[in-house]
Length: 297
Image 1: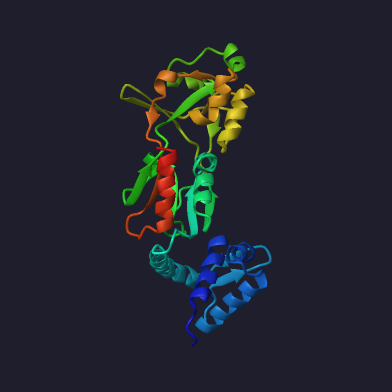
Image 2: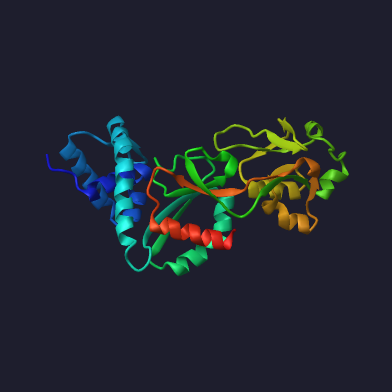
């Protein structure tokens, strides 16, 4: 049996990660037909099907999943070794993959990313935005960005950008026709813009006042899964929204929104860039963290 090459294995992992030959081909700089041929040859040499293909989708077989579990860490370590060697060159180069939620991605694009790309012209940044928490090691990311309270203990975290604060906000027009809530329980008598988490569950709003914590399963006729749309809906008078202060700041400053239950909305630990403590940190990730600390201390 001919031994698979490194490029063969990278081709398979790329298709498995994207669940698409076209997207994987774009990442690898190949044509979709060439990539398909590479994967079929790999399957033929191994004597097992790794991917199930249809006209609309690509799915990883059980054999493919087992190979991915063993292959992912190995390829990551190999890339780390190569990155370590290239660190002896003039400046960091290569590709950096970071997983973040949309709010964090917007903040990075406004501050860190332009400076990082100008400073390291041989670098490419793959910034993937999604709401769900992912296993960054298993899914091939160099780092992730989330709120500090969402991180697992085995990750090394770099805090940046200060604390964050979630606020309950509503339009003056909405509040003109309703009694302003004075305690979180009062929200049960209001139209609240409910939050659907990436898992599909509805978020129960969390409040705290002088060490007293309270969680409310708020009612409301409207449920959304996008912070920007929640803010817009609150501005339109559709109810009370619970959103990050940064997302609502412009509308608060222009008096399109008003804060309610402000004493129940303390600051919490903010965004963290995190990465596995069991893996080598590439020179490129070190460079990104350096810029991050400069721009968002």
